[in-house]
Structures are given as C-alpha cells and as structure tokens.
Length: 211
Image: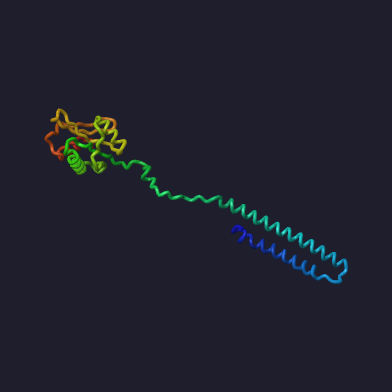
C-alpha cells in the first residue's frame, strides 16, 4: 500500500475497520446468545446478522477500492524518475563551445639532419617575440612535401593552426622563410642562408603577420 494510504488514508481505513468490528461484535453476541427466545427475537437476530455481513462486505470493498486508487495516484505522481546520469565525459573539452580568440602558429619541420633542433630553436625564439594574443605550437609539424598552402591547410585541419611558418631551399643555396594560411601565401623573406635562428624569428615578426 502506498505512503498516502498509510498516512492520509489512515483515518478513513481505521474508521471503517472500527465500524466493521462494532457491527460484527454485537452480531456475534446475538448469534451466540441463543436459548429460549421466541421467533420474533430469532428473526431480529437473523436480520441483524445479514445487515452486519452486508455492511462488512461494503466496508471491505471500500478498503480495496481505496488501496487501488492510492496505487494509481502514486504511479502518476512518480512516473519513473529519470535523474541526470554522470557519464564521466567532459563534453566541454570534447565539443568546445567556441574559440578562445588566440591565434595559433606552428613551425614546419626545417630540412636537414639538424632540422628538428633548429626548429625547436625557432619555436623558442618566436615565443619570445610574438604578441600575447598568439601562441606557438610546442612541436615541429611534419606535413609532407606539398606547397606551403597545402601544408598550412593540413595544419589547420589536424592541429587547428592559423599560421604555418616554413622554410624553402632553392638551388641548394638560397634559403627563404615564409608564412602561409590554409587559404594563401602571406609572406616570404629574402635570402636568410647566413642568418641565425634569432634573426630569422625577428624577420618573421617584422613581417607584420605574426602580430
């Protein structure tokens, strides 16, 4: 039986049970009193017994009906509570709500046996010179041998990079650096074959693109 029947309906159920007991006890007493009474007393006793049985049936039916009604109301009041389930997934990181307004720069892996070390030096030098609204990707990115724009498009797709810094070597002597996006080539330097990494970084920032 529901909580409402045990609490709110307790008075009704108790009153009904008391009525049934009060009716059944006199009936039982009359039925057991037997003896030398006349026929009119016997008829009265029988009538009382029938009346008591009828009232007991009505009271029992009411109690059953009240229990069924209470159960139905409880089902409607609590139609299967479905609380919030914690999946353990940080959806704010999986599906970010928007960009943070910071432009991201990556340096394409410089060629040659000392390319990885020189690239890391260039990354460090750029971090010292660029504005606070830009950030440089931690590692060199190796995106194949396509054009600077094609490599910048791959950097955008895979690393969410806005600007790609690259180096071009022509005729094994002329060394230039440039900046590209996924859409276009923005800037190329003059020959930097004899320049240090710090000078190259300064030229890249002086271009006005990385600001």
